[in-house]
Amino acid sequence: MTSTDISNITCAQFAAMPEAEQKAFVIGVANGRGMASGLFQAYAGAAQDFSATQDERDAIQASFKTIYAMMLPLLEIDAASLLNGIRSACKRPEFRDEFVINALASVHLDAAKALKQKYDAAS
Image (cartoon, rainbow, N blue to C red; front, side, top):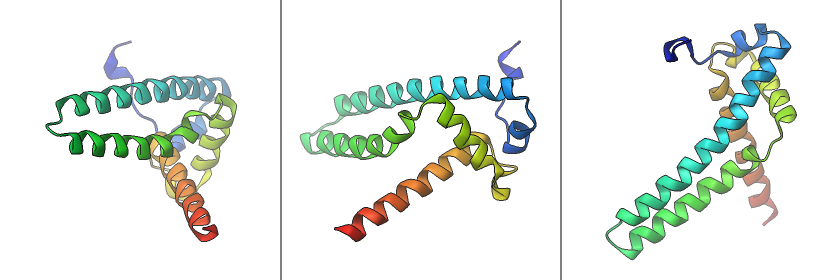
C-alpha cells in the first residue's frame, strides 16, 4: 500500500464499514490525536523561541494554553468512547458527506461552546 491509498473517509463511508474496520480507524485517530498534540506543543515552543519579545512569547504561551485546554477533553476520551462519539456524530444527517474527523471536531467544538456558555451563565 502506498501513501496515495490512504485517504480521509466520510461519515457515510465510516458507517458502511464493518465494526472491526471502524475500531481500527478509531485506534488510528486515537494515536493521531496524541501525535498531533505533541506536535502542537513542539510548534508552540518553537514559536516562542523565534519570538522577538517577551510579550510575543507570553502571547504564544497564553494562546497555547487556551487551545490546549479546549483540546484536552478530546485527548482524554478513551478509544471506546471515541468510537461511540464518531458513530453518534456520523449519524447526524448534516455530516453524512463530511470527513469523519471534521464531523467529530464540529461536535467537540459545539460541546466546548455549550460548556463555556454554561460556565459563563453560572459566573
